Length: 104
Image (cartoon, rainbow, N blue to C red; front, top):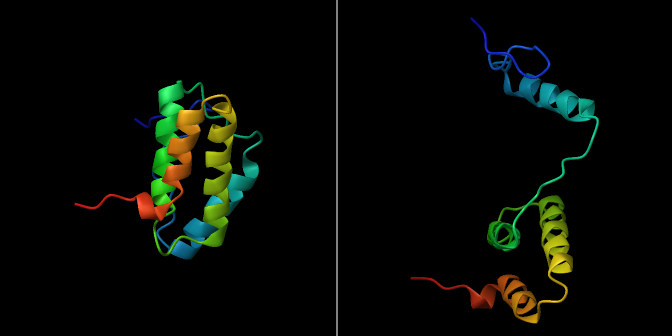
């Protein structure tokens, strides 16, 4: 018996074995989504944690410029959320500064 999604379609088993075909199918699936993803509701702590995780991901040396722009938009959204919180904004600024990284 197949497990069905909210639209009655089978879940899993639909991934093409060929990577190029899978990429084309993923592009079609992205184009078929009709509304933007809204992340939330996030608690203030979760929003800060998300920004920190994104800032950490930006440290990856092979990250594309496109991904860096998406990351910057996420962190900027969190900054706007905390506009009246100077200590949190300072922590977010430090998160953008690789010189603040701690290694063990």
